[in-house]
Length: 240
View 1 (cartoon, rainbow, N blue to C red):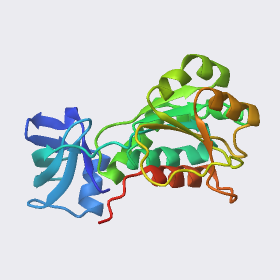
View 2 (spheres, one colour):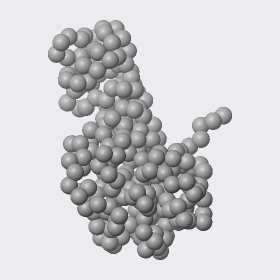
View 3 (spheres, rainbow, N blue to C red):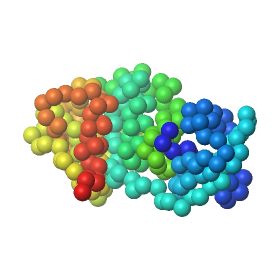
View 4 (tube, rainbow, N blue to C red):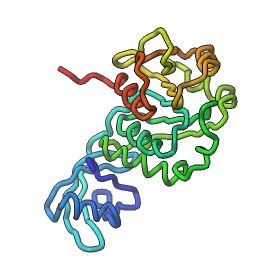
């Protein structure tokens, strides 16, 4: 846990919080913090900062808060992801949230098994739990928005135009002649297909809407690997 996330219900005063349950246990047992110790904290959808442990007992953790830092700049990339196998989705949601993605669209395509949409991992509580873990990892407080569009044609008819408005559309496609960019490209919408990729007609539909098919090269990657690599390519370069 790189950040202890706080919720509005934890606040007992503007600069004081009481934390119970699993988060209290993590601070006590994993971080081994006690009265007087300082922690990195952030208020969900609010500011970041430091907290001093003022009390810790078997039931709760009491913190004095100093929240003065804005959350990090979001990655200006919307991720449109063909719904992967449920056992991989949690890790992808976590990783995307940690990297600063603020809109994730889960999409049905021809190669997405219909049964995936019935998985409990898509329950709002389960999705939210994975996103919160990603925020803790990336020291962020702004919760991403997740949308589900099981029908590709309906997505194209009702949502695609808005997602591409004033954004560069990039379709990850192994057979594309254009290489995937290296470095920030400004506001973008990234389309990542299922295992086996988008079908040619799906790529053509996205291309006709204004998105550019691009390739990482001839080495196929699993979806969870590809998402990390592609988003990493679009992150700002902080090297001197």
